Image (cartoon, rainbow, N blue to C red; front, side, top):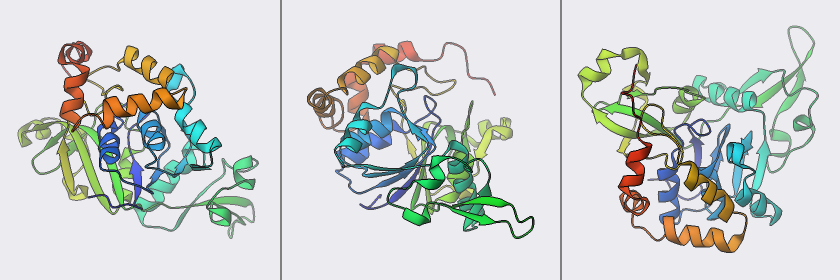
Length: 286
């Protein structure tokens, strides 16, 4: 469904709800030349960049949170295989909002006086503009809105009509889900409409925005999904360690992504006894 050369809004919020299963499937399908737009993410970006799927990123950060730097991304940038256009978290969020509002740009002040204004990569002078405000005469920064080919968002629950509920931190997923030309939702479970109606305030993405829904339990492993399962710290530590070297990263790629047929086979490889220990103990609340 995602052709080579596509641009993708990439949802999630750090450890929370990253669509890692979707990233792994893009790698298995040998997709190439994709551009990712996101405030930032972790394992999912690391595997996409490490596998050669994504040569361009427009982001605010990539790291493995408290565990350390993004080894694959740093290595690919040093090799000249990946270009990153740097924006702040607010600037990226405003770009998604602009795309959702169908306006060409959004104004903000926070980039003024930073190197982000003076330096750019592949976007050149189209990265942003600093103009004189037509109303006040003061300098203001304009960032281009984003309307990518696809928005990829991971939600906890979706009903058969496509109404998606997100618990916990939402991040930029509201704006991001509305800025793409097509929206693909990954969900932990499909539920009845009655359950959605029981807590309508949790329906962050109404069905009118949704094009496709994919049922993918543990879609964020080894990261977390609020109210469903915790992050797999031991696995994350292993992942961060092996990405320090290209040889061991390739071993991971061959074992956990290319070496399994699909996400279900990946979960079987991780082991259900291990996965079940990560499940939330308390019932989800909303």
